Image (cartoon, rainbow, N blue to C red):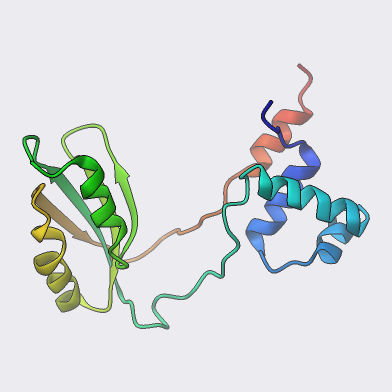
Length: 165
C-alpha cells in the first residue's frame, strides 16, 4: 500500500519546500511535534519519495547566467536515434534545466540557461542541433521572469483533507 501524507505531513513538506535547511528541531517547533516524531515523519516522507532532494535555490543572474531560453524542439519521426537516446543526450547537457515531452505540434520544450546570447548560439549549434533526431528548434528568449517557483500549492491538498467526505 502506498503511503498517503496527512495534513501534518503536508505542513512539514510545505515548510521544507520553503527552506530545506530547517532542522528537525525547527520543524517540530513549527508543527507542534516532538523532535523525534518530526524526524520520523520527514524520514518516512523522504523514503516514500515525496522529497526528491534538498537543494539551495541559486540566483542565476548573480552567477552570470543572464539568458533564459525556451527551445521548442521537433523530433524527426523517422530518426535512427531512439527517443531514449535523445532524452539521455539532452539530460547530459548541464545548460538544460528542464525538458518536457509535449503533445501537439512541438515534441519537446527545453528550458535552457546561458551566460549570454553568444553562448546560447554555441550551445544550439554545437550541442542541440547536432543531435541527429532534432528536426527543428525554435528558440524564445525570456525578457523578464514574472514568476519562478518550484513550490507546490500544498495548501490546496491540506484544505481538501479538511473537507468532510
